[in-house]
Image 1 (cartoon, one colour):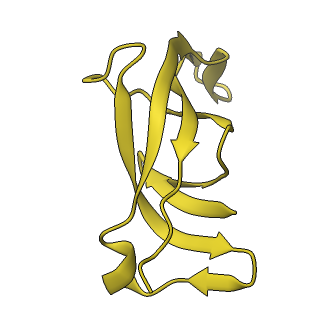
Image 2: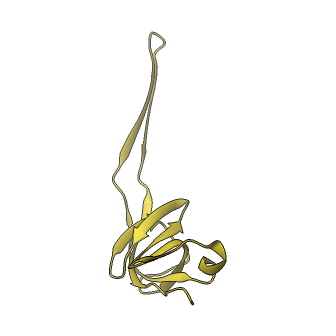
Length: 106
C-alpha cells in the first residue's frame, strides 16, 4: 500500500515506514506527529483518486530530523563587462517517517 502526498509544493510517493525529506516544517519539533494531504491512495488492486474521498484521508507521519541540504553554487557572469556574482544556498529540510496510511471508507 502506498500514497501520493503533497508537501511544500511537491508530490512524494510514500509507504508506511518510509523516511522522506520534505521542505522544512517550521511549526513541528522532532518527535511531533504531522498530517500530509493525500492525492492518491493505492491499496493492492484498488486505486482511490476521488477528491471527495481523499479529502478525509490524511497520512500520519512523525518528524525525525531537521537538517540542511547540499550546498548549491549560483554563479552569474557576463562576458567582457567584468560582471561576476557568486551566491550559495542550502535548503532547509525536515525528515519525516510515515507511520500510517488510512484506507478509504467503502
